[in-house]
Image 1 (spheres, one colour):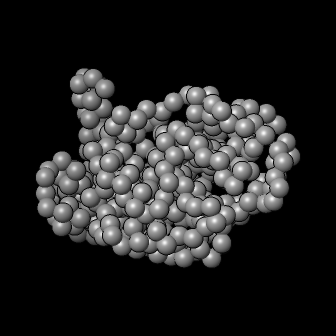
Image 2 (spheres, one colour; image 1 turned 30 degrees about the horizontal axis):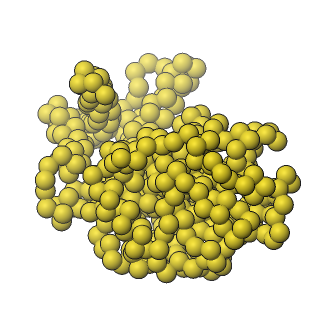
Amino acid sequence: MSAAAMFFGTAIMLLVLIGTNSYIALRIYQGVKCIIPQISAAIFFIIGLFLVIPFILGFLRSQLPLPASVKNTLGVISSYWMGIFLYLLFYFVVADAVILLLRITKVMSGPVPQNTYIISGLLVILATIVTVGYGLYNAGRIKHVYYEIILEEKIMPSELKIALISDLHLGALKSEKRLGKIVRDINDLEPDIVCITGDIFDNDFYAIHNPNEAKNLLKSIKSRYGVYACLGNHDAGKTINKMLNFLKRSNIRVLNDEYVVIDDRVVLVGRLDPSPIGGFGDMKRKDMEDVITGVDKSFPVIVMDHNPANIGEYENKADLVLSGHTHRGQVFPGNLVTWAMYVVDYGYYRKDGNNPHVIVTSGAGTWGLPMRVGSNCEIVSIKLR
């Protein structure tokens, strides 16, 4: 990316940040002024400054060489605040849209009554508290989802049970807290294979609070033929070698644009993500034809590819594609965005008989906001026959 493009992108982000924070600050100020008419307009700027401070703290966390304890504290503050900010903005926009509609339809005529700002502001704050509270609670639950895939074109001597997880984002807020339950739930399924489709880490290996405990938990996953993974866009950057070493010590085999034949009956392929944040070092994504050179075409071919945007590459080359990445938007209305962006952002999909079955999971963890609204943390169980 050129310096000009980076400058332009940063400028746009700053304008959006200033604009949205100013809008929320103004709406809060309007409500307070209706209750206390004598307050100064300076309160508006104080509210705006209070709103933007968590964003500044988040920026400092990523840019300055601060002690790990300070970075963790700043990360907690900015992560929680992002959820509060998102829903304050969303509900204020909804409230103002309702007021505008009432004025257009002449239900409300003349100036907006002062009590309208008070009532709408209180409703927005209440709705934000309820939504954020639910999102935090829901992110702590692990849902189980089941699929049965019949490969009519291939011979399966016996059914294969696959446990699929994605997007653990180890190092993100509360990621390690839920890891023990995820592992226990996987073991309860007694799978033949465990597939982890990327974003095991949250960009920086050193963000993990207790790597040894996380390693031991992952190492305790039980499956008949082992645990396999592919790398996602967040499993990259300066600590990529630390990540790969950690996975090796966790008894997780990473397939970097390579395949393995399991029990002489199925081929499992792992793809490198095409857009790693910070890069995979010397590793680059190959063409699928090069990856599967020498594969026995009579075997079913299962592909782990982190991003479902890549499923168009697998026509006549794979039987089942497993992906994650989207989080199903993670928090509403993000699921509307991912639904519009991807051919399939969640669940089961198959274009036609020449294309593979596709399963996209919403992921077992969270990224950024430690919340789930309109989506779930999940473990996927697949019966392949």
